[in-house]
Length: 222
Ligand code: DC
Image 1: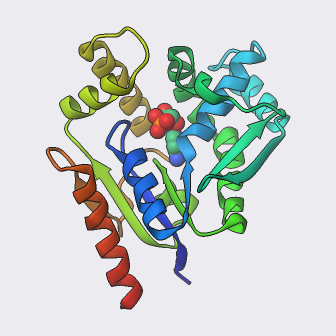
Image 2 (image 1 turned 135 degrees about the vertical axis):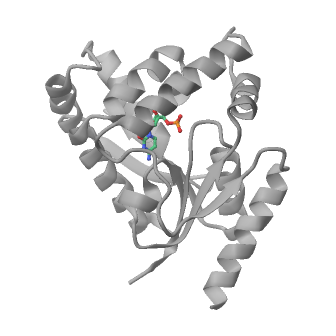
């Protein structure tokens, strides 16, 4: 059975997924979910606990001990981990560096995937990530793969960054993460076979949103 209550939006970092997914969710009155933030939050807890992000067994053990609580606020699914809300800490460079090995850990992926699937109990979802259409909700009726050129993605991420880095440094950091995300053994970044590919290079965000909404409306009528 196709799941008609989930829209999966996958793609590399800074492809415009977050802005697009947020706007699609707002237009439909569905809940926005940033699955990358959940992986980032696990990496943040791992760092806080003084665990080495590349120590697979220690990261797995620590992740099993995390108490996560998910709730709806302002049209999005948000969370506490270990009773704390992470906030801006998730965007720090230390978390950027730690999140790739943490997200490549198969135990972490199983735990986060179960958390993400459980969010369907909270309402209709627009979920962005890397493996939402391929692994988390392979039966989602609506799947999109959003992409943009590496130069455009570096410019976008640089514009939103609070840190004092050059566009080139931001581009290099994105590229490193893309490589780890695409080459890892478990749930690598891939295009789900039934996903619609949208290249947003040079497109206005609102046009990307409109294209997605049109396709969703069309497939709901079909
Ligand atoms: O989208 P982002 O940059 O916030 O994602 C942070 C990290 O989490 C990134 O390295 C990829 C990983 N991730 C993942 O492996 N699977 C997802 N569904 C979402 C994010």
